[in-house]
Length: 116
Image (cartoon, rainbow, N blue to C red; front, side, top):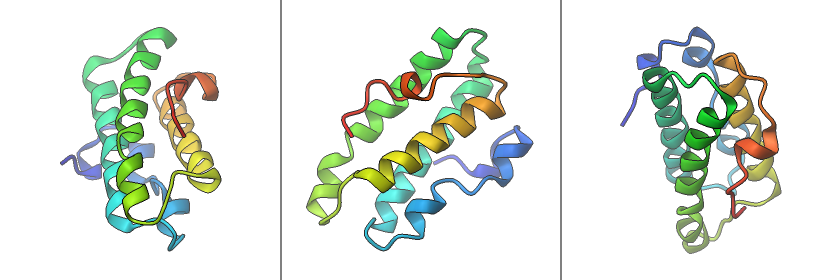
């Protein structure tokens, strides 16, 4: 599990990842934690692989989006789902990550592989 303090990007070291989901009791905290870890892993992957094109960035964000897709069953089992609030929250976080690393990416393309 990656610690947020391990990130080198100063903006993301201080960013309140998924606060919109953490502040809503509809979403089980342990599942929001899993989503946050996926986003932190994405940040670490960007820092290590240093993508230079949007296509390279999108490959990384699509892998992360697919991992979040894989959590849908767990959300269902816990009487929750990745619905409107979660979709918007996750999309905003993906966009923030892209911008923090200097990319002006299309938010829909960042999460194009989503099932949510």
